[in-house]
Image (cartoon, rainbow, N blue to C red; front, side, top):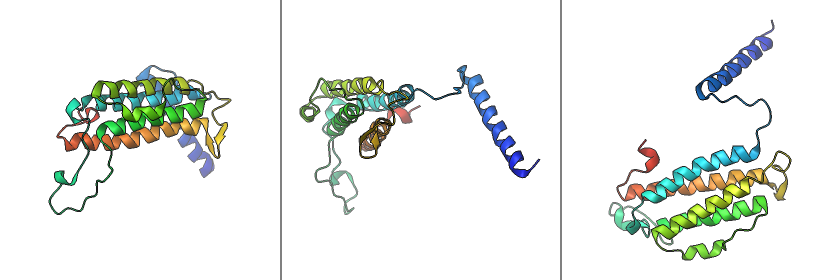
Length: 193
């Protein structure tokens, strides 16, 4: 056998072995054809939603207006926090972005004007607004198909890239919220496992 054939055979064996291992561990057959993009992106959205909503619910109600300030850092440390969003404002920003991405990728119209979310106050109302945005995003992602996932929306954006974008953007904001919890002496739920 030539070296390329040996290498190919080794890689193939590892891939098949990995697939068999996944199937044995989960009991779920390993797909052999295209994955339904709606199921794939919805699975990723569900993971993000679970971590995000657990973190939001973990923050005490009296800390929803918390934003970092120079007062919490070492005296003399150079910091600039003018215009930094509060915890609640970041959560509501994610809700607005969820509606924006989801509406563009699906063509669905939200029941809520995302602009008014900036005025939502109180932990329960913020949580409800965030959850409603995830519910809408799940509906939007359900519109993805193998046939339309790569349809252009604007420029090089496609339905699939917007579905990935909503998750990527959300995790970026999630990282900031993690720091807000830690600045308040709390361990984020995902880090407690």
